[in-house]
Image (cartoon, rainbow, N blue to C red):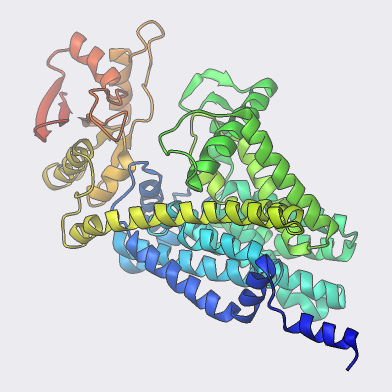
Length: 559
Protein backbone atom coordinates (compact mmCIF):
# COMPACT_ATOMS: atom_id res chain seq x y z
CA UNK A 1 0.00 0.00 0.00
CA UNK A 2 1.39 3.45 -0.94
CA UNK A 3 2.04 6.14 1.67
CA UNK A 4 -0.71 8.34 0.14
CA UNK A 5 -3.29 5.55 0.27
CA UNK A 6 -2.31 4.74 3.84
CA UNK A 7 -2.64 8.40 4.79
CA UNK A 8 -6.09 8.65 3.14
CA UNK A 9 -7.26 5.54 4.97
CA UNK A 10 -6.08 6.98 8.28
CA UNK A 11 -7.92 10.26 7.61
CA UNK A 12 -11.13 8.38 6.81
CA UNK A 13 -10.99 6.53 10.12
CA UNK A 14 -10.12 9.62 12.12
CA UNK A 15 -13.17 10.82 14.13
CA UNK A 16 -14.74 14.12 13.01
CA UNK A 17 -13.92 17.01 15.30
CA UNK A 18 -15.91 19.92 16.69
CA UNK A 19 -19.16 20.85 14.98
CA UNK A 20 -18.63 18.28 12.23
CA UNK A 21 -18.72 15.53 14.83
CA UNK A 22 -22.05 16.78 16.17
CA UNK A 23 -23.40 17.18 12.62
CA UNK A 24 -22.55 13.59 11.77
CA UNK A 25 -24.13 12.35 15.00
CA UNK A 26 -27.39 14.19 14.29
CA UNK A 27 -27.44 12.85 10.74
CA UNK A 28 -27.06 9.29 12.02
CA UNK A 29 -29.63 9.72 14.81
CA UNK A 30 -32.14 12.10 13.22
CA UNK A 31 -35.16 9.85 13.73
CA UNK A 32 -34.38 9.32 17.40
CA UNK A 33 -33.81 13.04 17.90
CA UNK A 34 -37.14 13.83 16.22
CA UNK A 35 -39.10 11.44 18.45
CA UNK A 36 -37.25 12.61 21.55
CA UNK A 37 -37.99 16.28 20.89
CA UNK A 38 -41.62 15.56 20.00
CA UNK A 39 -42.10 13.69 23.28
CA UNK A 40 -40.28 16.49 25.11
CA UNK A 41 -42.62 19.04 23.51
CA UNK A 42 -45.65 16.99 24.62
CA UNK A 43 -44.34 16.53 28.17
CA UNK A 44 -43.56 20.22 28.61
CA UNK A 45 -46.96 21.14 27.12
CA UNK A 46 -48.59 19.06 29.85
CA UNK A 47 -46.35 20.62 32.53
CA UNK A 48 -47.44 24.08 31.35
CA UNK A 49 -51.11 23.19 31.04
CA UNK A 50 -53.22 26.14 32.19
CA UNK A 51 -56.86 25.52 33.08
CA UNK A 52 -57.63 29.22 33.53
CA UNK A 53 -58.32 32.19 31.28
CA UNK A 54 -55.56 34.73 30.78
CA UNK A 55 -55.86 38.17 32.39
CA UNK A 56 -55.08 39.59 28.94
CA UNK A 57 -58.70 38.63 28.02
CA UNK A 58 -58.15 38.13 24.26
CA UNK A 59 -58.46 34.37 24.72
CA UNK A 60 -61.83 34.86 26.41
CA UNK A 61 -62.81 37.15 23.54
CA UNK A 62 -62.26 34.29 21.07
CA UNK A 63 -64.34 31.91 23.22
CA UNK A 64 -67.20 34.40 23.41
CA UNK A 65 -66.97 34.91 19.64
CA UNK A 66 -67.19 31.14 19.11
CA UNK A 67 -70.29 31.02 21.31
CA UNK A 68 -71.86 33.88 19.38
CA UNK A 69 -71.22 32.11 16.05
CA UNK A 70 -73.29 29.20 17.34
CA UNK A 71 -76.02 31.10 19.19
CA UNK A 72 -76.39 34.20 17.01
CA UNK A 73 -75.92 32.61 13.59
CA UNK A 74 -76.06 34.14 11.00
CA UNK A 75 -76.31 37.61 12.52
CA UNK A 76 -72.83 37.55 14.05
CA UNK A 77 -69.46 37.67 12.28
CA UNK A 78 -66.18 38.32 14.08
CA UNK A 79 -64.29 41.33 12.62
CA UNK A 80 -62.03 42.49 15.45
CA UNK A 81 -59.19 40.58 13.77
CA UNK A 82 -58.81 37.41 11.68
CA UNK A 83 -61.91 35.22 12.13
CA UNK A 84 -60.69 31.65 11.52
CA UNK A 85 -59.88 30.72 15.12
CA UNK A 86 -63.20 31.98 16.56
CA UNK A 87 -64.90 30.04 13.75
CA UNK A 88 -63.02 26.92 14.84
CA UNK A 89 -63.99 27.50 18.48
CA UNK A 90 -67.57 27.89 17.28
CA UNK A 91 -67.31 24.42 15.76
CA UNK A 92 -66.01 23.01 19.05
CA UNK A 93 -68.74 24.87 20.93
CA UNK A 94 -71.34 23.24 18.69
CA UNK A 95 -70.10 19.76 19.62
CA UNK A 96 -68.83 20.22 23.20
CA UNK A 97 -70.45 23.41 24.48
CA UNK A 98 -68.29 26.16 26.02
CA UNK A 99 -65.87 23.66 27.53
CA UNK A 100 -62.65 25.41 28.49
CA UNK A 101 -60.66 22.22 29.07
CA UNK A 102 -61.64 20.77 25.69
CA UNK A 103 -60.58 23.99 23.97
CA UNK A 104 -57.23 23.88 25.73
CA UNK A 105 -56.61 20.20 24.91
CA UNK A 106 -57.00 21.09 21.24
CA UNK A 107 -54.45 23.89 21.73
CA UNK A 108 -51.96 21.37 23.13
CA UNK A 109 -52.54 19.07 20.16
CA UNK A 110 -52.04 21.98 17.76
CA UNK A 111 -48.82 22.95 19.50
CA UNK A 112 -47.32 19.45 19.29
CA UNK A 113 -48.59 19.02 15.73
CA UNK A 114 -47.09 22.37 14.76
CA UNK A 115 -43.72 21.27 16.13
CA UNK A 116 -43.87 18.02 14.13
CA UNK A 117 -44.62 19.91 10.91
CA UNK A 118 -41.88 22.45 11.66
CA UNK A 119 -39.31 19.70 12.22
CA UNK A 120 -40.30 17.74 9.12
CA UNK A 121 -40.21 20.88 6.99
CA UNK A 122 -36.62 21.79 7.90
CA UNK A 123 -34.81 18.55 8.67
CA UNK A 124 -31.93 17.81 6.26
CA UNK A 125 -32.38 21.20 4.57
CA UNK A 126 -29.95 23.09 6.78
CA UNK A 127 -27.05 21.85 8.94
CA UNK A 128 -28.33 20.01 11.98
CA UNK A 129 -26.04 22.04 14.25
CA UNK A 130 -28.08 25.06 13.09
CA UNK A 131 -31.48 23.40 13.02
CA UNK A 132 -31.50 21.34 16.24
CA UNK A 133 -31.00 24.32 18.61
CA UNK A 134 -33.97 26.06 16.98
CA UNK A 135 -35.99 22.84 17.12
CA UNK A 136 -35.28 22.68 20.86
CA UNK A 137 -36.43 26.29 21.17
CA UNK A 138 -39.65 25.50 19.29
CA UNK A 139 -40.27 22.44 21.48
CA UNK A 140 -39.71 23.88 24.96
CA UNK A 141 -39.69 27.68 24.89
CA UNK A 142 -41.71 28.84 27.90
CA UNK A 143 -43.80 31.38 25.98
CA UNK A 144 -44.70 28.93 23.21
CA UNK A 145 -45.63 26.44 25.94
CA UNK A 146 -47.74 29.07 27.69
CA UNK A 147 -49.83 29.52 24.56
CA UNK A 148 -49.90 25.74 24.05
CA UNK A 149 -52.77 25.42 26.49
CA UNK A 150 -54.42 28.80 26.11
CA UNK A 151 -57.20 29.80 23.75
CA UNK A 152 -55.17 32.52 22.10
CA UNK A 153 -54.54 32.03 18.38
CA UNK A 154 -50.83 31.19 18.73
CA UNK A 155 -50.98 27.38 19.10
CA UNK A 156 -53.48 27.16 16.23
CA UNK A 157 -51.27 29.52 14.22
CA UNK A 158 -48.08 27.53 14.81
CA UNK A 159 -49.87 24.44 13.50
CA UNK A 160 -51.08 26.20 10.35
CA UNK A 161 -47.70 27.88 9.87
CA UNK A 162 -46.12 24.41 10.08
CA UNK A 163 -48.63 23.21 7.47
CA UNK A 164 -47.57 26.07 5.18
CA UNK A 165 -43.88 25.30 5.75
CA UNK A 166 -44.48 21.61 5.01
CA UNK A 167 -46.33 22.10 1.72
CA UNK A 168 -44.13 24.98 0.61
CA UNK A 169 -41.05 22.75 0.88
CA UNK A 170 -42.85 19.95 -0.96
CA UNK A 171 -43.81 22.39 -3.70
CA UNK A 172 -40.27 23.77 -3.99
CA UNK A 173 -38.83 20.25 -4.26
CA UNK A 174 -41.46 19.34 -6.87
CA UNK A 175 -40.72 22.43 -8.97
CA UNK A 176 -36.96 21.84 -8.73
CA UNK A 177 -37.34 18.30 -10.08
CA UNK A 178 -40.16 18.62 -12.61
CA UNK A 179 -40.81 22.36 -13.06
CA UNK A 180 -44.52 23.26 -13.10
CA UNK A 181 -47.18 20.94 -14.47
CA UNK A 182 -50.42 21.90 -12.80
CA UNK A 183 -52.29 19.02 -14.42
CA UNK A 184 -50.22 16.39 -12.59
CA UNK A 185 -49.29 18.50 -9.55
CA UNK A 186 -52.64 20.12 -8.74
CA UNK A 187 -53.12 18.35 -5.41
CA UNK A 188 -49.82 19.66 -4.02
CA UNK A 189 -50.44 23.16 -5.35
CA UNK A 190 -53.94 23.21 -3.85
CA UNK A 191 -52.58 22.11 -0.47
CA UNK A 192 -50.09 24.98 -0.66
CA UNK A 193 -52.92 27.37 -1.54
CA UNK A 194 -55.06 26.02 1.29
CA UNK A 195 -52.24 26.46 3.81
CA UNK A 196 -51.66 30.03 2.57
CA UNK A 197 -55.36 30.81 2.88
CA UNK A 198 -55.66 29.29 6.37
CA UNK A 199 -52.60 31.04 7.80
CA UNK A 200 -53.75 34.42 6.46
CA UNK A 201 -57.24 33.91 7.92
CA UNK A 202 -56.04 33.03 11.42
CA UNK A 203 -53.72 36.04 11.83
CA UNK A 204 -54.18 39.25 9.85
CA UNK A 205 -50.45 40.03 9.66
CA UNK A 206 -49.92 36.67 7.94
CA UNK A 207 -51.63 38.02 4.81
CA UNK A 208 -48.05 38.77 3.71
CA UNK A 209 -47.73 35.04 2.93
CA UNK A 210 -49.20 35.76 -0.52
CA UNK A 211 -46.74 38.50 -1.59
CA UNK A 212 -43.90 36.52 0.05
CA UNK A 213 -44.59 33.48 -2.15
CA UNK A 214 -44.98 35.74 -5.18
CA UNK A 215 -41.69 37.51 -4.42
CA UNK A 216 -39.91 34.20 -3.93
CA UNK A 217 -40.90 32.88 -7.34
CA UNK A 218 -40.19 36.30 -8.85
CA UNK A 219 -36.63 36.02 -7.53
CA UNK A 220 -36.55 32.49 -8.99
CA UNK A 221 -37.85 33.92 -12.29
CA UNK A 222 -40.31 31.05 -12.39
CA UNK A 223 -43.45 32.71 -13.72
CA UNK A 224 -45.44 29.47 -13.95
CA UNK A 225 -44.82 28.72 -10.29
CA UNK A 226 -45.70 32.30 -9.38
CA UNK A 227 -48.99 31.98 -11.22
CA UNK A 228 -49.73 28.53 -9.83
CA UNK A 229 -49.11 29.74 -6.27
CA UNK A 230 -51.39 32.74 -6.72
CA UNK A 231 -54.17 30.74 -8.38
CA UNK A 232 -54.02 28.01 -5.71
CA UNK A 233 -54.54 30.66 -3.01
CA UNK A 234 -57.31 32.47 -4.88
CA UNK A 235 -59.29 29.24 -5.32
CA UNK A 236 -59.87 29.13 -1.55
CA UNK A 237 -59.92 32.88 -0.94
CA UNK A 238 -62.60 33.57 -3.54
CA UNK A 239 -64.73 30.63 -2.37
CA UNK A 240 -64.41 31.81 1.26
CA UNK A 241 -65.32 35.42 0.48
CA UNK A 242 -68.31 34.21 -1.52
CA UNK A 243 -69.57 32.09 1.39
CA UNK A 244 -69.02 34.94 3.88
CA UNK A 245 -71.01 37.37 1.74
CA UNK A 246 -73.74 34.83 1.09
CA UNK A 247 -74.17 33.87 4.75
CA UNK A 248 -73.11 36.95 6.72
CA UNK A 249 -73.30 39.79 4.21
CA UNK A 250 -70.46 42.18 3.32
CA UNK A 251 -68.01 41.32 6.11
CA UNK A 252 -64.22 41.55 6.05
CA UNK A 253 -61.60 40.43 8.55
CA UNK A 254 -59.78 43.75 8.21
CA UNK A 255 -62.81 46.05 8.57
CA UNK A 256 -63.08 46.13 12.37
CA UNK A 257 -59.41 45.98 13.25
CA UNK A 258 -58.40 48.25 10.36
CA UNK A 259 -60.30 51.21 11.79
CA UNK A 260 -58.59 50.82 15.16
CA UNK A 261 -55.13 50.47 13.63
CA UNK A 262 -55.56 53.74 11.75
CA UNK A 263 -56.26 55.66 14.97
CA UNK A 264 -53.60 57.44 16.99
CA UNK A 265 -55.08 55.91 20.13
CA UNK A 266 -56.90 52.58 19.70
CA UNK A 267 -59.18 53.41 22.64
CA UNK A 268 -59.86 57.08 21.95
CA UNK A 269 -61.33 58.03 18.57
CA UNK A 270 -61.19 61.74 19.46
CA UNK A 271 -57.39 61.78 18.99
CA UNK A 272 -57.87 61.29 15.27
CA UNK A 273 -56.21 59.28 12.52
CA UNK A 274 -52.53 58.39 12.38
CA UNK A 275 -50.31 60.35 9.99
CA UNK A 276 -47.51 59.05 7.74
CA UNK A 277 -44.99 60.37 10.24
CA UNK A 278 -46.87 58.60 13.00
CA UNK A 279 -46.61 55.26 11.20
CA UNK A 280 -42.88 55.78 10.68
CA UNK A 281 -42.50 56.52 14.39
CA UNK A 282 -44.53 53.41 15.19
CA UNK A 283 -42.20 51.31 13.07
CA UNK A 284 -39.00 52.40 14.81
CA UNK A 285 -40.56 52.30 18.28
CA UNK A 286 -41.90 48.80 17.66
CA UNK A 287 -38.52 47.68 16.28
CA UNK A 288 -36.93 48.69 19.57
CA UNK A 289 -39.69 47.10 21.65
CA UNK A 290 -39.73 43.77 19.89
CA UNK A 291 -36.11 43.35 18.79
CA UNK A 292 -34.19 44.79 21.71
CA UNK A 293 -36.64 43.88 24.49
CA UNK A 294 -39.14 41.14 23.65
CA UNK A 295 -36.77 39.10 21.48
CA UNK A 296 -34.19 38.82 24.26
CA UNK A 297 -36.83 38.24 26.93
CA UNK A 298 -38.18 35.30 24.95
CA UNK A 299 -34.75 33.65 24.72
CA UNK A 300 -34.20 34.37 28.42
CA UNK A 301 -31.40 36.91 28.12
CA UNK A 302 -33.34 39.81 29.61
CA UNK A 303 -35.57 40.08 32.65
CA UNK A 304 -39.28 39.88 31.80
CA UNK A 305 -40.03 43.03 33.80
CA UNK A 306 -37.37 45.07 32.02
CA UNK A 307 -38.73 48.02 30.04
CA UNK A 308 -35.54 49.51 28.58
CA UNK A 309 -35.07 49.46 24.82
CA UNK A 310 -31.82 49.85 22.88
CA UNK A 311 -31.77 51.03 19.28
CA UNK A 312 -28.29 49.63 18.61
CA UNK A 313 -29.36 46.20 19.84
CA UNK A 314 -32.36 46.28 17.50
CA UNK A 315 -30.08 47.27 14.63
CA UNK A 316 -27.70 44.40 15.45
CA UNK A 317 -30.53 41.84 15.31
CA UNK A 318 -31.72 43.24 11.97
CA UNK A 319 -28.20 43.11 10.51
CA UNK A 320 -27.60 39.49 11.58
CA UNK A 321 -31.01 38.37 10.28
CA UNK A 322 -30.35 40.10 6.94
CA UNK A 323 -26.91 38.48 6.78
CA UNK A 324 -28.54 35.09 7.26
CA UNK A 325 -31.16 35.86 4.60
CA UNK A 326 -28.43 36.94 2.16
CA UNK A 327 -26.47 33.73 2.82
CA UNK A 328 -29.44 31.43 2.19
CA UNK A 329 -30.09 33.37 -1.03
CA UNK A 330 -26.48 33.02 -2.20
CA UNK A 331 -26.34 29.35 -1.21
CA UNK A 332 -29.71 28.67 -2.87
CA UNK A 333 -31.39 27.34 0.26
CA UNK A 334 -34.78 27.99 -1.28
CA UNK A 335 -37.12 26.90 1.55
CA UNK A 336 -35.33 28.99 4.16
CA UNK A 337 -35.22 31.94 1.74
CA UNK A 338 -39.00 31.76 1.28
CA UNK A 339 -39.69 31.43 5.01
CA UNK A 340 -37.25 34.23 5.78
CA UNK A 341 -39.09 36.51 3.35
CA UNK A 342 -42.41 35.54 4.90
CA UNK A 343 -41.40 35.99 8.56
CA UNK A 344 -39.52 39.20 7.78
CA UNK A 345 -42.52 40.65 5.94
CA UNK A 346 -44.83 39.64 8.79
CA UNK A 347 -42.63 41.35 11.38
CA UNK A 348 -42.30 44.43 9.15
CA UNK A 349 -46.07 44.74 8.71
CA UNK A 350 -46.69 44.26 12.45
CA UNK A 351 -44.13 46.94 13.35
CA UNK A 352 -45.78 49.44 11.00
CA UNK A 353 -49.46 48.93 11.79
CA UNK A 354 -49.64 47.95 15.48
CA UNK A 355 -49.89 50.63 18.14
CA UNK A 356 -46.82 50.77 20.36
CA UNK A 357 -48.88 50.62 23.55
CA UNK A 358 -49.93 47.02 22.80
CA UNK A 359 -46.35 45.72 23.19
CA UNK A 360 -47.14 41.99 23.40
CA UNK A 361 -44.40 39.36 23.15
CA UNK A 362 -46.61 37.11 21.04
CA UNK A 363 -46.35 39.58 18.14
CA UNK A 364 -42.70 38.65 17.54
CA UNK A 365 -42.93 35.12 18.96
CA UNK A 366 -44.52 33.68 15.80
CA UNK A 367 -41.58 34.95 13.72
CA UNK A 368 -38.83 33.82 16.06
CA UNK A 369 -38.21 30.22 14.91
CA UNK A 370 -37.32 31.42 11.41
CA UNK A 371 -35.45 34.45 12.75
CA UNK A 372 -33.34 32.20 14.97
CA UNK A 373 -32.65 29.88 12.03
CA UNK A 374 -31.32 32.84 10.04
CA UNK A 375 -29.30 34.16 12.99
CA UNK A 376 -27.73 30.77 13.78
CA UNK A 377 -27.17 30.17 10.06
CA UNK A 378 -25.20 33.43 9.80
CA UNK A 379 -23.20 32.70 12.98
CA UNK A 380 -22.45 29.17 11.80
CA UNK A 381 -21.32 30.25 8.34
CA UNK A 382 -18.94 32.93 9.55
CA UNK A 383 -17.48 30.96 12.47
CA UNK A 384 -17.32 27.34 11.29
CA UNK A 385 -13.83 27.51 9.76
CA UNK A 386 -11.73 28.71 12.67
CA UNK A 387 -11.24 26.97 16.01
CA UNK A 388 -12.16 30.11 17.96
CA UNK A 389 -15.13 30.65 15.65
CA UNK A 390 -16.49 27.19 16.47
CA UNK A 391 -16.17 28.04 20.15
CA UNK A 392 -18.06 31.33 19.69
CA UNK A 393 -20.89 29.60 17.82
CA UNK A 394 -21.09 26.83 20.42
CA UNK A 395 -21.17 29.32 23.29
CA UNK A 396 -23.96 31.38 21.68
CA UNK A 397 -26.08 28.28 20.99
CA UNK A 398 -25.53 26.81 24.46
CA UNK A 399 -26.40 30.13 26.10
CA UNK A 400 -29.66 30.45 24.15
CA UNK A 401 -30.80 26.85 24.59
CA UNK A 402 -29.57 26.64 28.18
CA UNK A 403 -31.46 29.79 29.11
CA UNK A 404 -34.62 28.59 27.36
CA UNK A 405 -34.42 25.19 29.06
CA UNK A 406 -33.87 26.59 32.56
CA UNK A 407 -36.70 29.11 32.16
CA UNK A 408 -39.08 26.38 31.03
CA UNK A 409 -38.11 23.95 33.78
CA UNK A 410 -38.59 26.62 36.44
CA UNK A 411 -41.98 27.71 35.14
CA UNK A 412 -43.17 24.19 34.41
CA UNK A 413 -42.63 22.90 37.93
CA UNK A 414 -44.10 26.10 39.41
CA UNK A 415 -47.24 25.57 37.33
CA UNK A 416 -47.89 21.94 38.36
CA UNK A 417 -49.46 22.63 41.81
CA UNK A 418 -51.62 25.40 40.29
CA UNK A 419 -53.05 23.33 37.47
CA UNK A 420 -53.56 20.40 39.84
CA UNK A 421 -55.84 22.51 42.06
CA UNK A 422 -57.62 23.96 39.02
CA UNK A 423 -58.39 20.52 37.60
CA UNK A 424 -59.61 19.35 41.02
CA UNK A 425 -62.25 22.07 41.01
CA UNK A 426 -60.64 25.26 42.37
CA UNK A 427 -60.93 27.25 39.16
CA UNK A 428 -59.82 30.52 40.79
CA UNK A 429 -56.57 29.22 42.31
CA UNK A 430 -53.59 30.90 40.67
CA UNK A 431 -55.28 34.26 40.20
CA UNK A 432 -54.33 37.21 42.38
CA UNK A 433 -57.09 38.41 44.81
CA UNK A 434 -58.20 41.26 42.54
CA UNK A 435 -58.94 38.84 39.72
CA UNK A 436 -60.50 36.24 42.00
CA UNK A 437 -62.97 38.85 43.24
CA UNK A 438 -63.72 40.08 39.73
CA UNK A 439 -64.37 36.58 38.37
CA UNK A 440 -66.37 35.46 41.41
CA UNK A 441 -68.53 38.55 41.03
CA UNK A 442 -69.06 37.66 37.37
CA UNK A 443 -70.22 34.20 38.43
CA UNK A 444 -72.50 35.77 41.07
CA UNK A 445 -74.11 37.87 38.34
CA UNK A 446 -74.89 34.73 36.34
CA UNK A 447 -76.36 32.98 39.37
CA UNK A 448 -78.25 35.87 40.97
CA UNK A 449 -79.34 38.37 38.33
CA UNK A 450 -82.13 37.98 35.81
CA UNK A 451 -81.21 36.70 32.36
CA UNK A 452 -82.14 40.01 30.74
CA UNK A 453 -80.01 42.09 33.15
CA UNK A 454 -76.96 43.48 31.37
CA UNK A 455 -73.82 44.23 33.39
CA UNK A 456 -71.20 46.70 32.13
CA UNK A 457 -67.64 45.79 33.12
CA UNK A 458 -63.98 46.21 32.18
CA UNK A 459 -63.28 42.64 30.94
CA UNK A 460 -66.58 41.47 29.50
CA UNK A 461 -65.27 38.37 27.66
CA UNK A 462 -63.67 37.03 30.86
CA UNK A 463 -66.92 37.69 32.73
CA UNK A 464 -68.73 35.80 29.97
CA UNK A 465 -66.54 32.69 30.47
CA UNK A 466 -66.71 32.65 34.27
CA UNK A 467 -70.28 33.94 34.23
CA UNK A 468 -71.43 30.70 32.57
CA UNK A 469 -72.20 32.27 29.22
CA UNK A 470 -74.09 35.31 30.52
CA UNK A 471 -73.70 38.33 28.26
CA UNK A 472 -71.79 41.31 29.69
CA UNK A 473 -71.35 44.77 28.23
CA UNK A 474 -67.70 45.74 27.54
CA UNK A 475 -66.11 49.02 28.68
CA UNK A 476 -62.68 49.51 27.12
CA UNK A 477 -62.34 53.26 27.60
CA UNK A 478 -63.99 56.16 29.42
CA UNK A 479 -67.26 56.79 27.58
CA UNK A 480 -68.67 60.25 26.85
CA UNK A 481 -65.47 61.81 28.17
CA UNK A 482 -65.45 65.42 29.34
CA UNK A 483 -62.37 67.16 27.90
CA UNK A 484 -61.81 69.13 31.12
CA UNK A 485 -62.20 66.42 33.76
CA UNK A 486 -61.14 63.43 31.57
CA UNK A 487 -64.05 61.63 33.19
CA UNK A 488 -67.47 60.79 31.80
CA UNK A 489 -70.14 63.45 31.55
CA UNK A 490 -72.72 61.96 33.96
CA UNK A 491 -75.89 62.65 31.97
CA UNK A 492 -74.35 61.52 28.69
CA UNK A 493 -72.98 58.35 30.30
CA UNK A 494 -76.36 57.49 31.82
CA UNK A 495 -78.10 58.14 28.51
CA UNK A 496 -75.57 55.90 26.77
CA UNK A 497 -76.08 53.06 29.26
CA UNK A 498 -79.83 53.43 28.90
CA UNK A 499 -79.60 53.22 25.10
CA UNK A 500 -77.52 50.03 25.41
CA UNK A 501 -79.99 48.57 27.96
CA UNK A 502 -77.27 48.32 30.65
CA UNK A 503 -78.84 47.65 34.06
CA UNK A 504 -75.75 47.12 36.27
CA UNK A 505 -72.13 48.24 36.49
CA UNK A 506 -69.34 46.07 37.92
CA UNK A 507 -66.44 48.02 39.44
CA UNK A 508 -63.28 46.02 40.11
CA UNK A 509 -59.95 46.83 41.77
CA UNK A 510 -57.77 45.35 39.02
CA UNK A 511 -54.10 46.04 39.63
CA UNK A 512 -51.99 48.09 37.25
CA UNK A 513 -48.97 46.09 38.38
CA UNK A 514 -50.23 42.48 38.25
CA UNK A 515 -47.35 41.19 40.41
CA UNK A 516 -48.21 43.14 43.57
CA UNK A 517 -50.86 45.28 45.23
CA UNK A 518 -49.50 48.83 45.03
CA UNK A 519 -52.89 50.47 45.47
CA UNK A 520 -52.85 51.61 41.84
CA UNK A 521 -55.72 50.15 39.86
CA UNK A 522 -57.20 50.27 36.35
CA UNK A 523 -59.68 53.10 36.90
CA UNK A 524 -61.54 53.22 33.58
CA UNK A 525 -64.91 52.26 35.12
CA UNK A 526 -64.24 54.42 38.20
CA UNK A 527 -63.88 57.47 35.94
CA UNK A 528 -67.32 56.72 34.54
CA UNK A 529 -69.26 56.17 37.75
CA UNK A 530 -67.63 58.82 39.98
CA UNK A 531 -69.24 61.81 38.19
CA UNK A 532 -72.57 59.96 38.22
CA UNK A 533 -72.34 59.38 41.99
CA UNK A 534 -71.38 62.98 42.63
CA UNK A 535 -74.29 64.42 40.62
CA UNK A 536 -76.86 61.71 41.37
CA UNK A 537 -76.01 60.10 44.76
CA UNK A 538 -78.98 57.72 44.63
CA UNK A 539 -78.63 56.68 40.99
CA UNK A 540 -76.26 53.76 41.64
CA UNK A 541 -77.33 51.21 44.24
CA UNK A 542 -74.73 48.78 45.67
CA UNK A 543 -76.17 45.25 45.39
CA UNK A 544 -73.14 43.00 45.90
CA UNK A 545 -69.53 43.14 47.16
CA UNK A 546 -67.02 40.38 46.45
CA UNK A 547 -63.92 39.90 48.62
CA UNK A 548 -62.42 41.42 51.75
CA UNK A 549 -59.47 43.07 50.02
CA UNK A 550 -59.19 44.43 46.47
CA UNK A 551 -62.96 44.17 46.33
CA UNK A 552 -65.24 44.07 43.34
CA UNK A 553 -68.53 45.97 43.60
CA UNK A 554 -71.75 45.53 41.65
CA UNK A 555 -74.07 48.53 41.30
CA UNK A 556 -77.59 48.60 39.92
CA UNK A 557 -78.63 51.64 37.89
CA UNK A 558 -81.81 53.00 39.43
CA UNK A 559 -84.66 53.66 37.01
